[in-house]
Figure 1 (cartoon, one colour):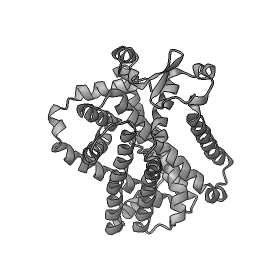
Figure 2 (cartoon, one colour):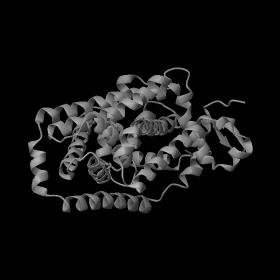
Figure 3 (cartoon, rainbow, N blue to C red):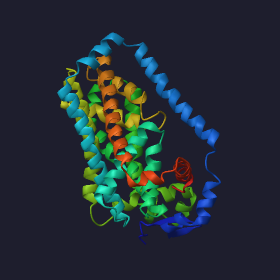
Figure 4 (cartoon, helix red, strand yellow):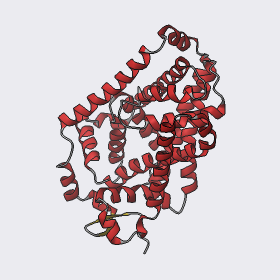
Length: 359
């Protein structure tokens, strides 16, 4: 029997997803929330990872050459790169709006974009602060707790799914470039795991009850949240297309920056290699991907014969472009009606509740 995508597995059977709004469930989750000292330690570790990788990269580079590259970048190409990153926020918003509509949340597009662009600002100034603020602003607009968390979780998962599809499409061009068997094994393993995960997600409601009961409840609940938009009757194709376009804009941005730095990066090289950088920087072990993104960019573009100083300059400019877009989000935040009711303590509580939620 096909189950509703808006159900979760709990106590041996599928139950309505609204259980995530049950105070008893949330109180139990709050008791399992990571304590403040532990959260502070995680943040410090992320800072250490970002700074450590950047220091190692800079020590191996000719800083005068890197500085010359950053100062000599074609300003027209740099402006175009920032414009592409800004345009990316509209595609990100469209993807999120489609997910919310699949969850029967009638959020207006302009309101959704305002929330999303503000979250980019908090992503720059607070570790993992963007999602907390996005959830807080949705809650201020009367959206249920289960739908706020579900939209964020589904948004992240669909981004990874689309990234996997792009990497898979580029594999025929990537394989001849990779001569390190360990790296090739890692890439193939990640893609195989993604394919198996997608198959398991699509067929989850057809698994035997005993098999589902053997899977941890949090994993089943997470799967039910992220599969719902994919099973929605309308907008599914547009949802997947928008998720892919978001990553292609990042690829195009790196290509434009390479042109501005006169780096010999072809469009095909960018399409094949930049998604690997995006995938690496998505691993939550650093602050905003800094450090990890730079190291991955140097390694990936090195497969195309790009000098390490040029690759590092491309990555730094990509990060600075994101900062510029984030600062624009800060300006939007200054005039946002929700700002007057914003409480850092409430946002922190939302972030902790998100960590404790059964997803």
